[in-house]
Amino acid sequence: MLIRLALWMIFLSLPFFLVAFTLKLAAFLLLGAFGLLILASFAGITKQFLDGFRNFFSAPQREKRRVLFAQNKKNTTQSLFYFKRLQLDYFKELQRKKILEKNNRTHIDALSKSIEQQLQSVNHLISKDLFSQLQLENRRYRSQQNEQALLELHQKISSLAGK
Image (cartoon, rainbow, N blue to C red; front, side, top):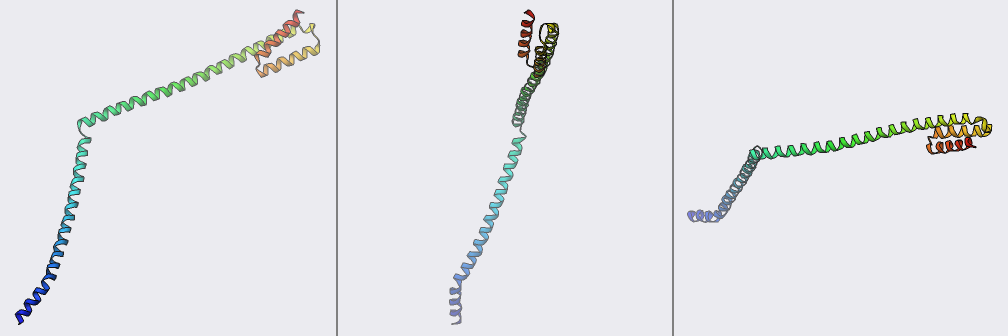
């Protein structure tokens, strides 16, 4: 009976032992699979890195980078040339305007002096009030740099001198 009881207990506890063994085996298999997955991913990443490294330093890629560098340098130089040209054109136009203003001032000053001399020559032919008024107009137009008004004043004085 003791044997029967022992056999009966073994048969009853056998499924529990099988389940415990199966769980341990499953845990070991899962742990092994997870480790294998980590090793495979590390190997894949390493392979990708080495392939990329080899590809980067390969002769065709070096030539491609040299060509791209030369194209970029050419584009940079062209845009720099364009902007330098724009800058030179701008400064040349500023210089031209300065020279034109200076030339206009010189001509206006010369015209004003000519009007002043003409006024002095016709001083005895016109009244003092008209003479003073014409002198004031001459000074005002000269300070305003109004070339057209000075020319009209010159014509006006010439017509007074002709009378």
